[in-house]
Amino acid sequence: MKRKKILFNIVSLIIFFYTITPISLICHADNEEAQRLFFSGVNMIENEMGARDNDLLSQIRLIVNIVYGLIGVIFFILIIYGGILWMTAGGKDEQVKKAQNIIQRVTIGLFIVVLAYAITYFILKRIL
Image (cartoon, rainbow, N blue to C red; front, side, top):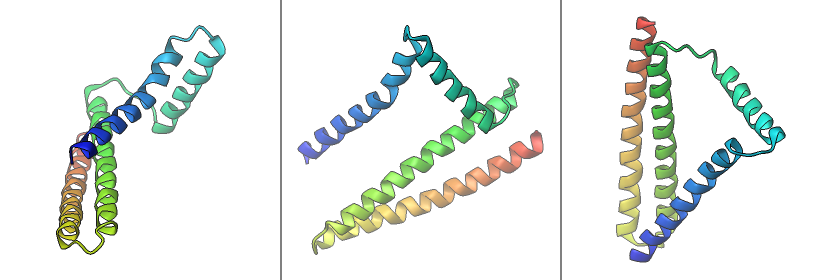
């Protein structure tokens, strides 16, 4: 159990540094072409997301959307974890029940988050 926890922490750190490091390296690069390519990609994504306003409500909407997106990714990972746990149970009833509990709780949590998103979307739409 302790080995799994250590392995999970190492993999998490590798993924974290793998995704964060290129951004900081590109921003400090001396190569003008690399900076131009990076910032053109950032500007393209910004245009895809829509015009950014600097008022408070637009910033709140952006933060809420980012948080809900991250929560969605976490739910996806937990569903995959529960499925893998269930598939690798090998007839162990305890592990199957644990996987079923994980999937059930994640599904209920996802339902609650979707309802919360609908409520916040409705409120922010009325305010804006």
